[in-house]
Image (cartoon, rainbow, N blue to C red; front, side, top):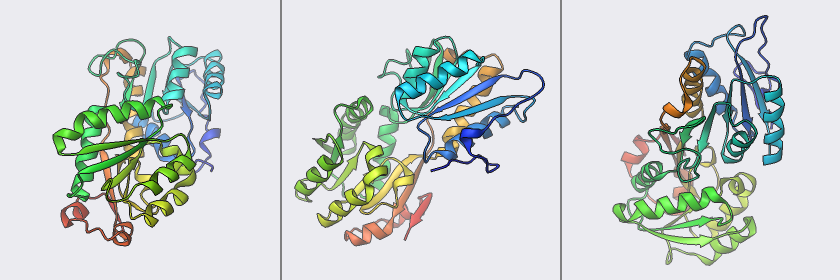
Length: 317
């Protein structure tokens, strides 16, 4: 998939040059499907006063591994670099290792405190700050919105990859906040897509009322197959990325609006370029969009309350 900037140019080719030497910012991470986030970063920078080629240079690198992220960041550092926007955890870890003295704004990391990237949410310290998408505060908001769509939800199956640190962190937060909302988390380990489909086939409404799959990369790659199995077994799927709301069996998605999340990161970078220290900028939480898929709900025989439909950012019929 080719990402595009608001002007239509592929984001991997963006170069804003100027006769002077404006600050240089690198946006790096696995960006397939995240063009709106990159556009949001640009919008946040423009709102912060960096409006043209005379004000800033932006370079975007779409990478798929830690090694690729390290290489891209090292290359940018060699040509001088004033700040890095990292998309997801691997790119953030790479930036911390390769460019420890360059300000980093992550967008997002599930829980930067639990991942030991920052000292605290209020006072990150060091060279890193950014957006948290699945810490305890965010996990509580996500579960609350799921309950608005499925008021009868009591047992939530959570499929997670124990070998993937963000999954472990998010599961811990879900288990922490669920009891206060009257929910029981039914955890199931999965190692790959085939494992996820096998576990779904073994579940039914006698075990859980709905299933949340944390490893969203697998849903992006094999969501149709996973959704087919869930539909066959009459299981409602819940997801944490609004872009996945159209998949079969997905009844609701609750997650950050990419563009708005990018704007938050862009605003933070603008403040840093104006002299703020990243360690003094508190961790931000993006607003969450609720997307309701009434088609999937109808296929599964579920009635969604009118209040949830009215409160949704988007409804799929």
